[in-house]
Amino acid sequence: MAAEGKTIDALSQFELATVLGPIGSSVGFSQSNAHMLLAAGLITALIMFGMSARAVVPGRLQSLAESSYEFVHDLVLGQVGDEGKRFFPFVFTLFMFVLFGNLLGLLPYAFTFTSHIAVTFALAAVVFVLITVVALMLHGRKFFGYFFPEGAPIWLAPIIIPVEIVSYLSRPVSLSIRLFANMVAGHVMLKVFATFIVLLGGLGAIGPFVAVLPLGVNIALVGFEVLVAFLQAYVFAILTSIYLHDAVHLH
Amino acid sequence: MPQLEFGNPLIIAQIVWLLIIFGVLYFVLSTYALPRVAEVLEDRRRRIEGDLEAAQAAKAEADAAIAAYREASAKARAEAQAAIAEAMQSAQAETTARADALAARLAKQIDEAEARIGRARDAAMGALRQVSTETADALLVRLTGRSDQAVLGAAVDRALAARGQG
Image (tube, rainbow over all chains, first blue to last red; front, side, top):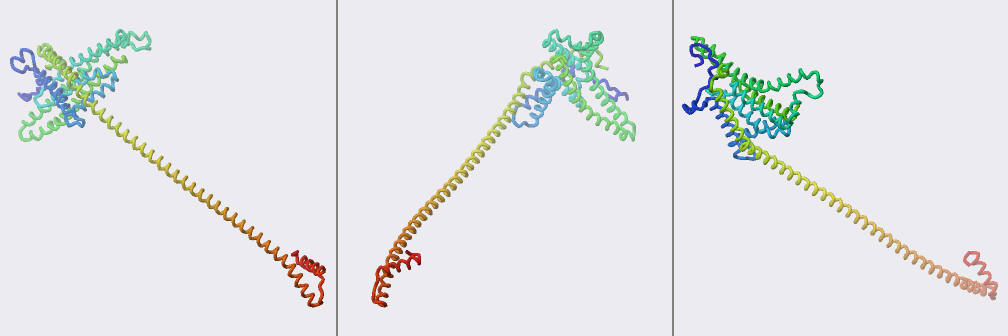
């Protein structure tokens, strides 16, 4: 479908379509949501089946489950400190959900739900609401002192306060656009080079030889995209942890 | 770009489903899955700590045993040395005492013998005067036919004195 009519159609892969027939369409359950459900199921299965042996010396799956646990645990506690234990399940869920969303999207025919700005922004908004609520609950009115650092000259307040407020409000925007843009760019690139393979492959006798070039690029891109999938999940999780640190400690 | 067609009702539905799925995932992970991992990790940590503690205790025990052994052997050596020294001292003392006793007995015997010799010599000396007087008298009688006891006695005494035996 990508090479249909000899055009490059890199964006139709992001189109939403309902699944599960009439039931799905009546509740608006799209393939994106199906992939979310799959990711959630895989994460739960990884932990539940992985840890079902409860072995002192872990097997492969248990090692994977434990190392993902410890990775996020160290990340959260390293950034937030001991108070971070309360937020660990949230950051773990977020990290695994984004990671599995990114990785599942790399499979052929799969849909990448993290390539939808609405999804990434919703996740970032959840983070934003959480950090604001936590900061307000822990510090009450003192939270607003966050927007004016102590010791700054008072005449700078008209500049500092708007800047701080804008920077605070831009957090969910940057958090969501970073993930969305990375995933979209990667998948568009993959699609474009995949289309090149098909288009060049049709160029008569030399076609298959020339088509090897975009194929090589695509192979490299897939490896790169795996890296990006991990990296963006990590960035999402560590930025959430940093924001939580600010919420808990106010600077 | 399909992501930016916010008029599409599926985008709103997608977010609603996202929040539901994410919420359920969070609930399941935080309630069932993650405590399980934490439990296993804690269990392992406790077990390793317990093993390390047991090893440390065993090491301490071994160290104590070695120290006790060293102390005991040092004590035994010191005792043996003391016993040897004591035995040597007592043996030496006994030897000295025996030698002293022997020396004393010998000295006494020597003294007694000397006294006996002295007595015998005195007796002999006493007898010598008589014998010499009698002999001189007999010689004198033979030669001159007379005897003068007083002169003879004085002469014998003089001669004996001259010899330093008087």
